[in-house]
Length: 473
Image (cartoon, rainbow, N blue to C red; front, side, top):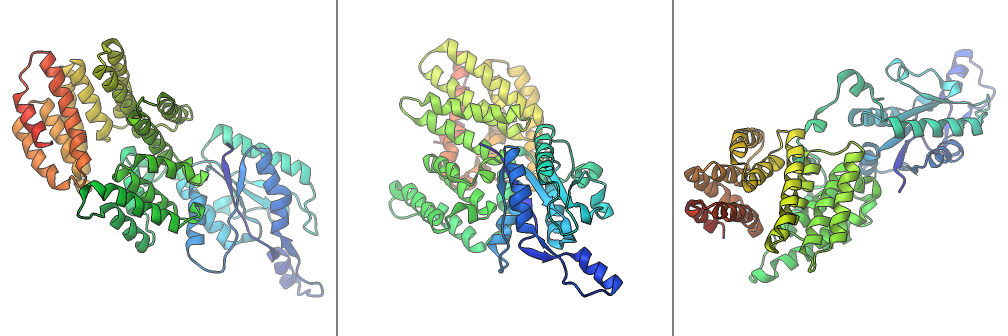
Protein backbone atom coordinates (compact mmCIF):
# COMPACT_ATOMS: atom_id res chain seq x y z
CA UNK A 1 0.00 0.00 0.00
CA UNK A 2 1.19 3.52 -0.80
CA UNK A 3 1.83 5.88 2.14
CA UNK A 4 -0.38 8.90 2.68
CA UNK A 5 0.78 12.41 1.86
CA UNK A 6 -1.25 15.10 3.60
CA UNK A 7 -1.73 18.38 1.74
CA UNK A 8 -1.82 21.69 3.60
CA UNK A 9 -3.34 24.29 1.28
CA UNK A 10 -5.93 27.00 0.79
CA UNK A 11 -9.21 26.15 -0.93
CA UNK A 12 -11.43 27.58 -3.66
CA UNK A 13 -10.58 30.92 -5.35
CA UNK A 14 -8.89 33.44 -3.09
CA UNK A 15 -7.84 37.07 -3.77
CA UNK A 16 -4.15 37.28 -4.69
CA UNK A 17 -2.71 39.28 -1.80
CA UNK A 18 0.35 40.29 -3.84
CA UNK A 19 -1.93 41.81 -6.48
CA UNK A 20 -4.02 43.51 -3.80
CA UNK A 21 -0.88 44.96 -2.20
CA UNK A 22 0.36 46.23 -5.57
CA UNK A 23 -3.00 47.96 -6.21
CA UNK A 24 -2.82 49.72 -2.83
CA UNK A 25 0.77 50.82 -3.43
CA UNK A 26 0.02 52.21 -6.92
CA UNK A 27 -3.53 53.31 -6.02
CA UNK A 28 -4.62 51.60 -9.23
CA UNK A 29 -8.02 49.90 -8.79
CA UNK A 30 -9.31 49.90 -12.38
CA UNK A 31 -8.99 46.11 -12.71
CA UNK A 32 -10.47 43.63 -10.22
CA UNK A 33 -8.11 41.88 -7.78
CA UNK A 34 -6.67 38.74 -9.32
CA UNK A 35 -7.94 35.42 -7.95
CA UNK A 36 -5.82 32.31 -7.23
CA UNK A 37 -7.62 29.03 -7.94
CA UNK A 38 -6.15 26.75 -5.24
CA UNK A 39 -8.45 23.84 -6.11
CA UNK A 40 -7.06 23.90 -9.66
CA UNK A 41 -3.45 23.97 -8.38
CA UNK A 42 -4.20 20.94 -6.20
CA UNK A 43 -6.00 18.98 -8.92
CA UNK A 44 -3.60 19.80 -11.77
CA UNK A 45 -0.22 19.88 -9.99
CA UNK A 46 -0.09 18.67 -6.39
CA UNK A 47 -2.35 15.61 -6.52
CA UNK A 48 -0.86 14.18 -9.76
CA UNK A 49 2.70 14.71 -8.40
CA UNK A 50 1.84 12.81 -5.21
CA UNK A 51 0.34 9.95 -7.21
CA UNK A 52 3.40 9.95 -9.48
CA UNK A 53 5.58 9.55 -6.36
CA UNK A 54 3.57 6.41 -5.45
CA UNK A 55 1.83 8.10 -2.52
CA UNK A 56 -1.82 8.64 -1.75
CA UNK A 57 -2.99 12.28 -1.44
CA UNK A 58 -5.02 13.14 1.64
CA UNK A 59 -6.70 16.50 2.06
CA UNK A 60 -9.16 17.86 4.63
CA UNK A 61 -11.50 20.47 3.18
CA UNK A 62 -12.51 23.48 5.21
CA UNK A 63 -15.62 23.30 7.37
CA UNK A 64 -17.60 26.17 8.85
CA UNK A 65 -17.76 24.76 12.39
CA UNK A 66 -14.82 24.41 14.76
CA UNK A 67 -14.91 20.89 16.15
CA UNK A 68 -14.01 17.32 15.35
CA UNK A 69 -13.17 18.07 11.68
CA UNK A 70 -10.36 20.36 12.80
CA UNK A 71 -9.17 17.80 15.34
CA UNK A 72 -8.98 15.00 12.78
CA UNK A 73 -7.26 17.37 10.35
CA UNK A 74 -4.58 18.20 12.93
CA UNK A 75 -4.10 14.50 13.61
CA UNK A 76 -3.59 13.79 9.91
CA UNK A 77 -1.06 16.63 9.73
CA UNK A 78 0.84 15.01 12.60
CA UNK A 79 0.46 11.33 11.72
CA UNK A 80 0.77 11.19 7.91
CA UNK A 81 4.28 10.17 6.96
CA UNK A 82 4.59 12.77 4.18
CA UNK A 83 3.22 16.28 3.77
CA UNK A 84 3.11 18.99 1.09
CA UNK A 85 2.35 22.52 2.34
CA UNK A 86 1.37 25.20 -0.21
CA UNK A 87 2.37 28.51 1.38
CA UNK A 88 1.28 30.69 -1.55
CA UNK A 89 -0.62 33.83 -0.51
CA UNK A 90 0.68 33.78 3.10
CA UNK A 91 -2.42 31.98 4.39
CA UNK A 92 -2.05 32.09 8.22
CA UNK A 93 -3.82 28.72 8.58
CA UNK A 94 -1.27 27.07 6.28
CA UNK A 95 1.65 28.53 8.27
CA UNK A 96 0.05 27.47 11.57
CA UNK A 97 -0.49 23.91 10.28
CA UNK A 98 3.07 23.75 8.90
CA UNK A 99 4.41 24.86 12.31
CA UNK A 100 2.41 22.08 13.96
CA UNK A 101 3.83 19.58 11.49
CA UNK A 102 7.41 20.76 12.06
CA UNK A 103 6.93 20.46 15.83
CA UNK A 104 6.31 16.70 15.70
CA UNK A 105 7.82 15.47 12.43
CA UNK A 106 11.58 15.76 11.87
CA UNK A 107 11.38 14.93 8.15
CA UNK A 108 9.22 14.32 5.04
CA UNK A 109 7.60 17.78 4.82
CA UNK A 110 7.86 19.75 1.56
CA UNK A 111 6.78 23.41 1.52
CA UNK A 112 5.81 24.64 -1.95
CA UNK A 113 5.05 28.15 -3.24
CA UNK A 114 4.13 29.89 -6.49
CA UNK A 115 7.04 31.68 -8.20
CA UNK A 116 5.22 35.03 -7.98
CA UNK A 117 5.10 34.74 -4.16
CA UNK A 118 8.72 33.73 -3.62
CA UNK A 119 10.80 34.32 -1.47
CA UNK A 120 9.29 33.11 1.78
CA UNK A 121 9.62 34.80 5.20
CA UNK A 122 13.00 34.19 6.87
CA UNK A 123 11.83 31.57 9.42
CA UNK A 124 10.58 29.32 6.61
CA UNK A 125 12.68 30.56 3.73
CA UNK A 126 15.98 28.99 4.77
CA UNK A 127 14.36 25.59 4.37
CA UNK A 128 14.34 23.77 1.06
CA UNK A 129 11.15 24.95 -0.66
CA UNK A 130 9.76 23.79 -4.00
CA UNK A 131 8.83 26.70 -6.30
CA UNK A 132 6.21 26.06 -9.00
CA UNK A 133 6.02 28.39 -11.96
CA UNK A 134 3.04 30.66 -12.71
CA UNK A 135 2.53 33.36 -15.35
CA UNK A 136 1.14 36.86 -14.81
CA UNK A 137 -2.44 35.51 -14.94
CA UNK A 138 -1.55 32.85 -12.34
CA UNK A 139 -1.77 29.95 -14.75
CA UNK A 140 0.58 27.02 -14.15
CA UNK A 141 3.21 27.85 -16.76
CA UNK A 142 5.45 24.78 -16.41
CA UNK A 143 2.89 22.17 -15.37
CA UNK A 144 4.52 18.98 -16.69
CA UNK A 145 8.01 19.96 -15.53
CA UNK A 146 6.83 21.06 -12.07
CA UNK A 147 4.73 17.92 -11.70
CA UNK A 148 7.75 15.69 -12.40
CA UNK A 149 10.07 17.76 -10.17
CA UNK A 150 7.64 17.80 -7.23
CA UNK A 151 7.22 14.01 -7.60
CA UNK A 152 11.02 13.72 -7.63
CA UNK A 153 11.26 15.75 -4.40
CA UNK A 154 8.66 13.50 -2.75
CA UNK A 155 10.49 10.35 -3.87
CA UNK A 156 13.71 11.79 -2.43
CA UNK A 157 11.94 12.51 0.88
CA UNK A 158 10.68 8.93 0.91
CA UNK A 159 14.17 7.55 0.34
CA UNK A 160 16.40 9.85 2.41
CA UNK A 161 14.16 10.91 5.33
CA UNK A 162 16.70 13.62 6.16
CA UNK A 163 15.66 16.21 8.77
CA UNK A 164 13.81 19.18 7.25
CA UNK A 165 12.03 20.53 10.35
CA UNK A 166 13.82 23.66 11.61
CA UNK A 167 12.85 22.71 15.18
CA UNK A 168 14.52 19.31 14.96
CA UNK A 169 17.38 20.64 12.87
CA UNK A 170 18.24 23.54 15.19
CA UNK A 171 16.82 22.52 18.57
CA UNK A 172 17.36 18.76 18.24
CA UNK A 173 13.92 17.34 18.92
CA UNK A 174 11.23 17.37 21.58
CA UNK A 175 9.62 15.34 24.36
CA UNK A 176 7.14 12.73 23.08
CA UNK A 177 9.85 11.27 20.90
CA UNK A 178 11.87 10.64 24.08
CA UNK A 179 9.18 8.65 25.87
CA UNK A 180 9.75 5.01 26.71
CA UNK A 181 8.21 3.05 23.81
CA UNK A 182 6.32 0.66 26.09
CA UNK A 183 4.54 3.65 27.70
CA UNK A 184 3.62 5.51 24.51
CA UNK A 185 0.12 4.09 24.09
CA UNK A 186 -0.73 5.14 27.64
CA UNK A 187 0.90 8.56 27.22
CA UNK A 188 -1.04 9.10 24.00
CA UNK A 189 -4.26 7.95 25.62
CA UNK A 190 -3.84 9.92 28.86
CA UNK A 191 -2.45 13.20 27.59
CA UNK A 192 -4.32 13.83 24.36
CA UNK A 193 -7.54 15.61 25.28
CA UNK A 194 -10.70 14.49 23.57
CA UNK A 195 -14.41 14.60 24.29
CA UNK A 196 -14.96 13.62 27.92
CA UNK A 197 -18.24 12.02 26.92
CA UNK A 198 -16.57 9.35 24.75
CA UNK A 199 -13.77 8.83 27.27
CA UNK A 200 -16.32 8.22 30.02
CA UNK A 201 -18.34 5.89 27.79
CA UNK A 202 -15.28 3.72 27.12
CA UNK A 203 -14.24 3.73 30.79
CA UNK A 204 -17.73 2.58 31.77
CA UNK A 205 -17.76 -0.13 29.07
CA UNK A 206 -14.40 -1.52 30.28
CA UNK A 207 -15.57 -1.73 33.90
CA UNK A 208 -19.15 -2.89 33.26
CA UNK A 209 -20.24 -5.75 35.52
CA UNK A 210 -23.38 -7.66 36.48
CA UNK A 211 -24.41 -10.44 38.84
CA UNK A 212 -23.13 -13.19 36.55
CA UNK A 213 -19.30 -12.98 36.26
CA UNK A 214 -19.31 -15.54 33.42
CA UNK A 215 -21.13 -13.01 31.21
CA UNK A 216 -19.11 -9.92 32.21
CA UNK A 217 -16.51 -10.08 29.43
CA UNK A 218 -19.12 -10.62 26.70
CA UNK A 219 -21.15 -7.67 27.98
CA UNK A 220 -18.05 -5.44 28.07
CA UNK A 221 -17.15 -6.42 24.50
CA UNK A 222 -20.71 -5.66 23.39
CA UNK A 223 -20.58 -2.26 25.13
CA UNK A 224 -17.28 -1.30 23.42
CA UNK A 225 -18.57 -2.58 20.06
CA UNK A 226 -21.66 -0.37 20.45
CA UNK A 227 -19.47 2.70 21.07
CA UNK A 228 -17.32 1.93 18.01
CA UNK A 229 -20.44 1.55 15.82
CA UNK A 230 -21.95 4.73 17.26
CA UNK A 231 -18.99 6.88 16.20
CA UNK A 232 -18.28 5.38 12.79
CA UNK A 233 -16.93 6.12 10.19
CA UNK A 234 -13.59 5.70 11.94
CA UNK A 235 -11.76 8.17 9.67
CA UNK A 236 -13.84 10.96 11.26
CA UNK A 237 -12.89 9.93 14.80
CA UNK A 238 -9.99 11.54 16.67
CA UNK A 239 -6.85 9.44 16.83
CA UNK A 240 -6.86 9.65 20.65
CA UNK A 241 -10.33 8.11 20.69
CA UNK A 242 -9.27 5.37 18.25
CA UNK A 243 -6.27 4.52 20.47
CA UNK A 244 -8.53 4.38 23.52
CA UNK A 245 -10.94 2.07 21.68
CA UNK A 246 -8.05 -0.20 20.67
CA UNK A 247 -6.58 -0.33 24.20
CA UNK A 248 -10.07 -0.83 25.69
CA UNK A 249 -10.30 -4.12 23.78
CA UNK A 250 -6.81 -5.04 24.96
CA UNK A 251 -7.60 -4.21 28.61
CA UNK A 252 -10.43 -6.74 28.71
CA UNK A 253 -8.47 -9.31 26.65
CA UNK A 254 -10.92 -9.08 23.74
CA UNK A 255 -8.12 -9.94 21.35
CA UNK A 256 -10.22 -11.10 18.37
CA UNK A 257 -12.19 -7.84 18.53
CA UNK A 258 -9.00 -5.82 19.01
CA UNK A 259 -7.47 -7.31 15.85
CA UNK A 260 -10.65 -6.74 13.85
CA UNK A 261 -10.77 -3.12 15.06
CA UNK A 262 -7.12 -2.44 14.17
CA UNK A 263 -7.70 -3.81 10.66
CA UNK A 264 -10.55 -1.30 10.19
CA UNK A 265 -8.49 1.73 11.22
CA UNK A 266 -7.79 4.47 8.66
CA UNK A 267 -4.42 3.73 7.10
CA UNK A 268 -2.76 6.91 8.35
CA UNK A 269 -3.45 5.61 11.90
CA UNK A 270 -2.96 1.89 11.13
CA UNK A 271 0.56 2.54 9.78
CA UNK A 272 1.82 4.38 12.87
CA UNK A 273 4.54 2.57 14.85
CA UNK A 274 2.33 2.41 17.94
CA UNK A 275 -0.54 0.67 16.14
CA UNK A 276 1.74 -1.62 14.12
CA UNK A 277 3.32 -2.84 17.37
CA UNK A 278 -0.10 -3.49 18.89
CA UNK A 279 -1.14 -5.27 15.69
CA UNK A 280 1.86 -7.62 15.96
CA UNK A 281 1.05 -8.20 19.64
CA UNK A 282 -2.55 -9.17 18.93
CA UNK A 283 -1.71 -11.30 15.87
CA UNK A 284 0.64 -13.36 18.03
CA UNK A 285 -1.87 -13.55 20.88
CA UNK A 286 -4.71 -14.72 18.62
CA UNK A 287 -2.52 -17.10 16.63
CA UNK A 288 -1.19 -18.72 19.81
CA UNK A 289 -4.68 -19.20 21.30
CA UNK A 290 -5.99 -21.16 18.31
CA UNK A 291 -6.13 -24.92 18.37
CA UNK A 292 -4.13 -25.91 16.44
CA UNK A 293 -1.88 -22.86 16.71
CA UNK A 294 -2.20 -20.53 13.70
CA UNK A 295 1.43 -20.35 12.54
CA UNK A 296 0.47 -18.12 9.58
CA UNK A 297 -0.90 -15.45 11.93
CA UNK A 298 2.19 -15.63 14.15
CA UNK A 299 4.46 -15.36 11.11
CA UNK A 300 2.50 -12.28 10.02
CA UNK A 301 3.14 -10.75 13.47
CA UNK A 302 6.88 -11.28 13.00
CA UNK A 303 6.72 -9.79 9.50
CA UNK A 304 5.10 -6.63 10.91
CA UNK A 305 7.94 -6.27 13.44
CA UNK A 306 10.60 -7.10 10.85
CA UNK A 307 9.25 -4.35 8.61
CA UNK A 308 9.56 -1.84 11.45
CA UNK A 309 13.14 -2.96 12.01
CA UNK A 310 14.00 -2.75 8.31
CA UNK A 311 12.59 0.80 8.16
CA UNK A 312 14.66 1.68 11.27
CA UNK A 313 11.46 2.32 13.25
CA UNK A 314 11.90 -0.50 15.76
CA UNK A 315 11.80 0.44 19.45
CA UNK A 316 12.20 -1.30 22.80
CA UNK A 317 8.48 -2.15 22.54
CA UNK A 318 9.00 -3.71 19.08
CA UNK A 319 11.72 -6.01 20.41
CA UNK A 320 9.75 -6.71 23.59
CA UNK A 321 6.80 -7.99 21.54
CA UNK A 322 9.18 -9.97 19.32
CA UNK A 323 10.67 -11.54 22.45
CA UNK A 324 7.13 -12.42 23.62
CA UNK A 325 6.47 -14.24 20.34
CA UNK A 326 9.49 -16.50 20.92
CA UNK A 327 8.72 -16.87 24.62
CA UNK A 328 5.27 -18.19 23.66
CA UNK A 329 6.86 -20.54 21.11
CA UNK A 330 9.22 -21.72 23.85
CA UNK A 331 6.25 -22.42 26.18
CA UNK A 332 4.43 -24.47 23.56
CA UNK A 333 7.51 -26.50 22.60
CA UNK A 334 8.38 -27.12 26.26
CA UNK A 335 4.86 -28.35 27.08
CA UNK A 336 5.06 -30.73 24.12
CA UNK A 337 8.46 -31.92 25.43
CA UNK A 338 10.23 -30.80 22.23
CA UNK A 339 13.29 -29.78 24.22
CA UNK A 340 15.60 -29.01 21.28
CA UNK A 341 13.01 -26.67 19.74
CA UNK A 342 12.26 -25.14 23.14
CA UNK A 343 15.94 -24.23 23.66
CA UNK A 344 16.10 -22.48 20.26
CA UNK A 345 13.00 -20.40 21.05
CA UNK A 346 14.33 -19.48 24.51
CA UNK A 347 17.58 -18.40 22.86
CA UNK A 348 15.63 -16.22 20.39
CA UNK A 349 13.46 -14.77 23.17
CA UNK A 350 16.66 -13.84 25.01
CA UNK A 351 18.05 -12.20 21.88
CA UNK A 352 15.00 -9.98 21.29
CA UNK A 353 14.43 -9.09 24.94
CA UNK A 354 18.11 -8.18 25.17
CA UNK A 355 17.75 -5.96 22.05
CA UNK A 356 14.72 -4.27 23.60
CA UNK A 357 16.49 -3.73 26.93
CA UNK A 358 19.65 -2.37 25.31
CA UNK A 359 17.60 -0.16 22.97
CA UNK A 360 16.16 1.70 25.97
CA UNK A 361 17.23 0.65 29.46
CA UNK A 362 14.44 2.83 30.89
CA UNK A 363 11.88 0.32 29.56
CA UNK A 364 11.40 -2.29 32.29
CA UNK A 365 9.18 -4.55 30.16
CA UNK A 366 11.90 -6.10 27.94
CA UNK A 367 14.29 -5.74 30.90
CA UNK A 368 12.39 -7.97 33.32
CA UNK A 369 11.69 -10.51 30.58
CA UNK A 370 15.38 -10.56 29.64
CA UNK A 371 16.28 -11.22 33.29
CA UNK A 372 13.61 -13.97 33.56
CA UNK A 373 14.84 -15.69 30.39
CA UNK A 374 18.40 -15.59 31.74
CA UNK A 375 17.11 -17.22 34.93
CA UNK A 376 15.33 -19.94 32.90
CA UNK A 377 18.40 -20.57 30.75
CA UNK A 378 20.49 -21.10 33.88
CA UNK A 379 22.60 -17.92 33.60
CA UNK A 380 21.50 -16.79 37.05
CA UNK A 381 24.64 -14.82 37.83
CA UNK A 382 24.06 -12.49 34.88
CA UNK A 383 20.34 -12.31 35.67
CA UNK A 384 21.03 -11.13 39.23
CA UNK A 385 23.59 -8.57 38.03
CA UNK A 386 20.90 -6.97 35.87
CA UNK A 387 18.16 -6.96 38.55
CA UNK A 388 19.19 -3.60 40.16
CA UNK A 389 19.23 -1.83 36.76
CA UNK A 390 15.74 -3.06 35.81
CA UNK A 391 14.47 -2.30 39.31
CA UNK A 392 15.84 1.25 38.97
CA UNK A 393 13.92 1.67 35.68
CA UNK A 394 10.66 0.69 37.42
CA UNK A 395 11.27 2.94 40.43
CA UNK A 396 12.17 5.88 38.16
CA UNK A 397 8.90 5.45 36.28
CA UNK A 398 6.97 5.27 39.57
CA UNK A 399 8.44 8.64 40.64
CA UNK A 400 7.10 10.30 37.49
CA UNK A 401 3.77 8.51 37.21
CA UNK A 402 1.32 6.85 39.58
CA UNK A 403 2.30 3.19 40.01
CA UNK A 404 0.18 0.53 38.32
CA UNK A 405 -0.14 -3.24 38.75
CA UNK A 406 2.68 -4.02 36.32
CA UNK A 407 5.17 -1.89 38.24
CA UNK A 408 4.69 -3.91 41.43
CA UNK A 409 4.40 -7.21 39.52
CA UNK A 410 7.78 -6.49 37.90
CA UNK A 411 9.35 -5.68 41.26
CA UNK A 412 7.82 -8.89 42.68
CA UNK A 413 9.34 -10.99 39.88
CA UNK A 414 12.76 -9.35 40.29
CA UNK A 415 12.67 -9.97 44.06
CA UNK A 416 11.89 -13.66 43.43
CA UNK A 417 14.88 -13.95 41.07
CA UNK A 418 17.05 -12.43 43.82
CA UNK A 419 15.54 -14.90 46.36
CA UNK A 420 14.31 -11.93 48.40
CA UNK A 421 10.95 -13.52 49.22
CA UNK A 422 9.91 -11.14 52.01
CA UNK A 423 10.16 -8.22 49.54
CA UNK A 424 8.36 -10.27 46.90
CA UNK A 425 5.44 -10.79 49.30
CA UNK A 426 5.40 -7.07 50.12
CA UNK A 427 5.15 -6.24 46.40
CA UNK A 428 2.31 -8.78 46.08
CA UNK A 429 0.25 -6.82 48.62
CA UNK A 430 1.05 -3.56 46.80
CA UNK A 431 0.01 -5.11 43.48
CA UNK A 432 -3.18 -6.82 44.66
CA UNK A 433 -5.53 -3.78 44.84
CA UNK A 434 -4.25 -2.63 41.43
CA UNK A 435 -5.06 -5.93 39.67
CA UNK A 436 -8.28 -4.65 38.10
CA UNK A 437 -8.54 -7.72 35.84
CA UNK A 438 -8.13 -11.34 36.98
CA UNK A 439 -5.85 -12.19 34.05
CA UNK A 440 -3.19 -9.81 35.41
CA UNK A 441 -2.39 -12.14 38.30
CA UNK A 442 -2.45 -15.03 35.82
CA UNK A 443 0.32 -13.45 33.74
CA UNK A 444 2.57 -12.97 36.78
CA UNK A 445 1.80 -16.45 38.09
CA UNK A 446 2.72 -17.92 34.68
CA UNK A 447 6.19 -16.36 34.93
CA UNK A 448 6.69 -17.61 38.49
CA UNK A 449 5.50 -21.11 37.51
CA UNK A 450 8.22 -21.24 34.83
CA UNK A 451 10.88 -20.21 37.36
CA UNK A 452 9.59 -22.87 39.78
CA UNK A 453 9.65 -25.55 37.08
CA UNK A 454 13.20 -24.79 35.96
CA UNK A 455 14.53 -24.49 39.52
CA UNK A 456 12.98 -27.86 40.37
CA UNK A 457 14.74 -29.38 37.35
CA UNK A 458 18.00 -28.02 38.77
CA UNK A 459 17.19 -29.65 42.11
CA UNK A 460 16.60 -26.37 43.97
CA UNK A 461 14.14 -25.70 46.79
CA UNK A 462 11.09 -23.80 45.47
CA UNK A 463 8.89 -23.78 48.60
CA UNK A 464 9.09 -20.00 49.14
CA UNK A 465 8.29 -19.16 45.49
CA UNK A 466 5.39 -21.61 45.45
CA UNK A 467 3.80 -19.82 48.43
CA UNK A 468 3.88 -16.52 46.52
CA UNK A 469 2.63 -18.16 43.30
CA UNK A 470 -0.24 -19.68 45.29
CA UNK A 471 -1.36 -16.20 46.39
CA UNK A 472 -1.67 -15.27 42.71
CA UNK A 473 -4.03 -18.18 41.93
